[in-house]
Length: 165
Image (cartoon, rainbow, N blue to C red; front, side, top):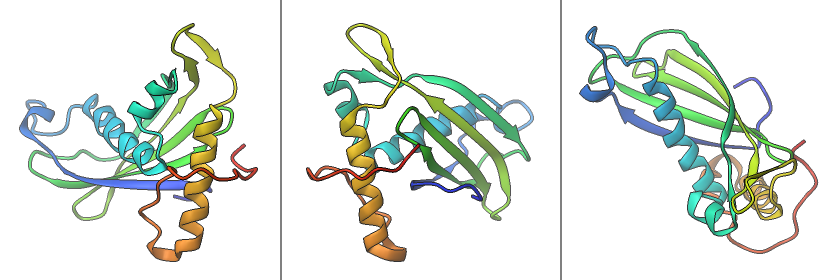
């Protein structure tokens, strides 16, 4: 990932039979399912997964999706998907990379999401304060943990920093 990011997560997976088409390669729409799965891993790592999001009264629908297919994954192949949080204050912007078992890039993509107040269905032009706080706690925890800072969680209450666009 060349662009600066705040938090990352990754998830290994195996290409299942139900994800492939008649040619034995992953049907193009199923890559989006893999993106959703690693996005859940990323949000849980931050400490603002879907259960917290709903409890806080927000939803984060995808408002844009860009996908570049570089090479296909095949049935039975081991793969790794990585997610990178690029922006989090005004909207949530996440980049994704999917690699095959040889470490070759297969898919590069990006999503944007805006917070929506669940009760009123109104778009929020700033992400919820708790989300921002938990991202910033996670970033601080990763910076303090050095190279092994993979396991962060934003569950503690603390002062939030001032980054994130």
